[in-house]
Image 1 (cartoon, rainbow, N blue to C red):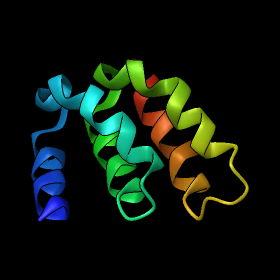
Image 2 (cartoon, rainbow, N blue to C red):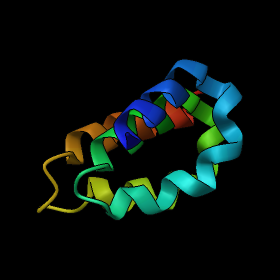
Image 3 (cartoon, rainbow, N blue to C red):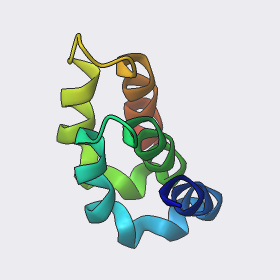
Image 4 (cartoon, rainbow, N blue to C red):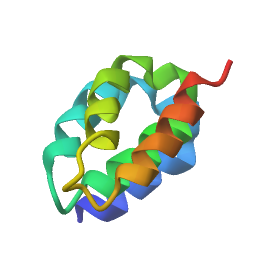
Length: 79
């Protein structure tokens, strides 16, 4: 189950930094977008490569998770 796998990655936090490239395409998946955003937020600054993709979600008026994307950006940009 993809949701179970991605929530396990959330628990790893910054240690899951190596999966950021695999999470980016999930931002385009309606069923996984929310979970990908939560996981990227949990990874934090180590998910910096995802910033342009998360920004796109935050500006997408059609996305029900635009607010979560804005929160994810805050977490990634924390130093």
